[in-house]
Image 1 (tube, rainbow, N blue to C red):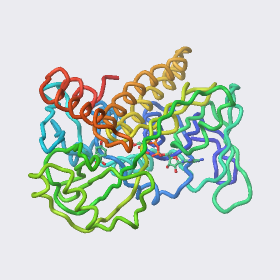
Image 2 (cartoon, rainbow, N blue to C red):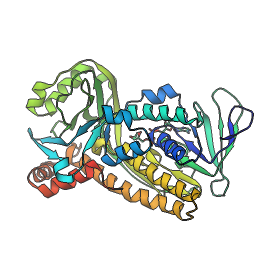
Image 3 (cartoon, rainbow, N blue to C red):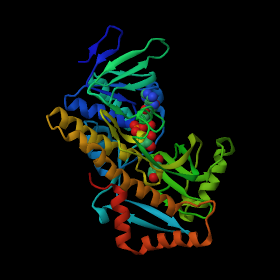
Image 4 (cartoon, rainbow, N blue to C red):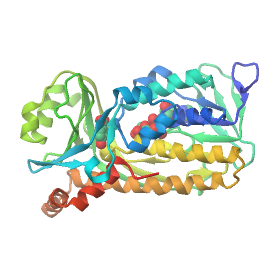
Length: 400
Ligand code: APR
Ligand code: PHB
């Protein structure tokens, strides 16, 4: 158990995890199963974290890691296996058969559910989670004895936790990446000139498999969470405001962009969640400074088109757990392997997500030549088994 300082907060632990999203929670769970103790600090309340709606397509490797972490039971019972998906353009559609081409499938299971399963497991583990922390500061991670200080919600005092390692799992806007000394981290970024307007509705999905649609009015995606919960997205311009998108306008626009057969079958209903998300590719490297390690969105962002965000967080955490367990098991080089191993896989997913985004979206300055190139890229995918296999391998997840 963690050493306590009489304030209600631990004084020392092995690993301090910053951030209680999927990356931080999964790391805590894998470490717990290896007998390594971690205290988790989260800026938001538990209810807030559990209420966030995020993506929901899991690579087969992600499912394996979640099972190994001991949180596979509900996922295996309720997750929906998908052996393929549809791509459409110029009002024709074709299917990519993941299983036939790559020998792997994906599983549709909401990130919100994964987070709930991981919080449940964390409660059982007995490891400490502190919510509503403010002003987290990471210190001395260039030395052998780092520590983290923070202010608990509403109290003026600061608390300090000493540790062996700090895991920065605090997302893109977190404090961990910003704590790297100036000049020790390099950032690569592309901001796309559009966003995704997403709607969740308690209606049956329009199709059994996902439909990714390239359309002259902009990209559209038909996805789902379960047999009575659908998730749809349409590409919108950068400055669009939610209040300008009542449900009827959203459904009308979606119908225009998807194949006619799907538009005719679409069942609409009131939205139970609606949001606009910007699209960005971002990588920070290296993902380690001394005894501070970054994982998940803290180190990289991909546009959602390739469904890779959560999957990358899981592969980072898999490698980070390996590195920390290796270190505590006496392998002195384990920690050095983390950043290069994680980044190799990150860049592959960044490439795939960028390719999917470029192939499927309408750019504001798109010329007729660019448009033909996009359509020919999709036509090539339609006729070429090799091209389809490449897409299937990347979508279902490159091996760890
Ligand atoms: N101190 C403590 N916690 C923080 C801080 C901070 N300074 N800053 C951010 N956090 C918390 C956030 O409130 C959030 O709960 O860190 C958590 C980060 O979680 P995510 O943003 O979900 O990132 P990650 O766990 O890496 O998951 C990646 O989630 O965001 C999606 O698209 C992303 O699917 C991907 C996956
Ligand atoms: C989703 O269901 O939210 C989803 C699915 C596939 C994507 C992105 C989001 O590529």
